[in-house]
Length: 414
Image 1: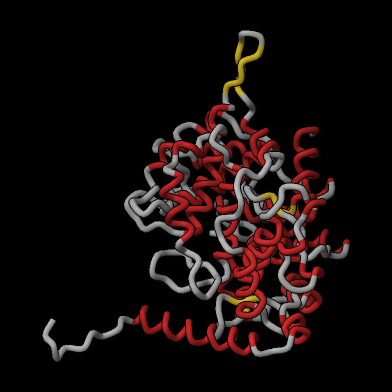
Image 2: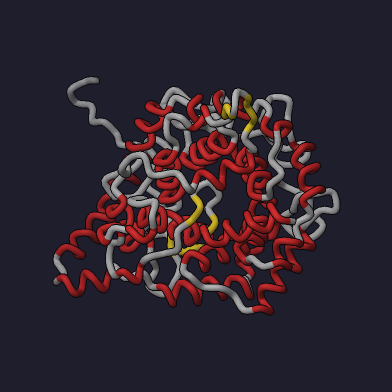
């Protein structure tokens, strides 16, 4: 470079500088406040969030018409967020949601984005998790598990991966949706698991994270999906875990939140996609893949894949958190939270149901990551008032733990 040449900042660099300035001003203003005012600023606006979320389940404005094919996701984002807040919906709304999702269920298995639409693995995951979050016999019995299994088999690809829908793309997201739905419904078997691990291994990049498909860039969402899937099929130790952790820890930036990819901006949804992966790795101890075959009296038997998710949450936490959970809570509460309800990507953006769901999911993870025994939850784990404490989730499925246990009992009985 010639001495007279001045380097020109890229668009990404300028955006990063601008965001750092915005977040920096928020933190500086906060630091100047007296302790009682700081405490109030750190309060989770629980009632306002509840009002915002319930409103989204009853009536969406016309600006949401672009989400027409994602309506099971709107159900999940809002129901799961409410469940994290310890809130439920009234009986009439619950019945309306069950009836709507039943109309989204294809006669040949799986759920589409709306009544009469093609079944899709992503909306199938959203619909199943919505029904599990609602809980109760009517919701859980509405899922046609025998046809669901056939649908999952049809989406299976010779590569080991899954197609997201008939004729659709094959990626790690589809693998997670298929395996997690099968696991939580107690229908996961060798046929569905076959070669899934090899496909996901082919997606781990030189950086250590996991990409959507072979040869693409490591991404926080796909890393969560890949790690969770490998745990559910008992093959997580086949991943290069040291390299994965090395990539993961560098995704928490100076803003205190997480970004999804290298050299990208912080986004509150990665509070879960990245923070949740840490929660998985805490329990994924070095012997997990040795449990597939357990000797008994000189013989051996294969562990039921469907037991892995259940047993996983019984595991003791093997290591301390590898990210700063209180810093993450600071970003969520001060930079993502809207005073009148809902959470947003980052300062300057607008609130929406997706970011509300995954910001609250990440907030729950960061609060509960210190302990595997809720009775021993450390006071320092919750930033701000103790009333900020959210319900714990099952880290593999991102459903509230109590709702998971109800579904587990139901699907192993019926």
